[in-house]
Image (tube, rainbow, N blue to C red; front, side):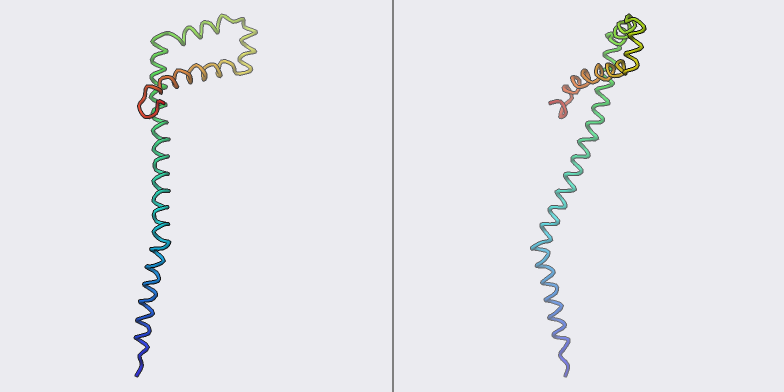
Amino acid sequence: MDFSFITDFFDSINQFLQYAWDWLAIGIYEFVKECFVVMTKASIYAFIQGTIFLVDVAAEVVGDISADLGVTQAAQSAYNSIPSDMRATLDFFGVPQALTIILAAIPTRMVMRFIPFIGR
């Protein structure tokens, strides 16, 4: 009489129990770690997307405020009062573009301080 089916049955149970033990010993750790990695990535992505959105909002607010106060026209008239040869040199080195970036970034940062969760 052939009783190999009994050994096959117990080998299958042994393999299943070994697999279950390995999952309990190692698999849960890997699963939890992967969950934290995915949640961290999602949190960082959401924070970056929110920051980009809020920078756009702050830049629009600064643009509206500077247009209402006439800051752009005052800066443009002050720049036009510089002699033309000096303006050409400043244009060559990109000073007007740098000043535009700086004069937009500082008030944008100030406005972002008024936005909840981003303003620190």
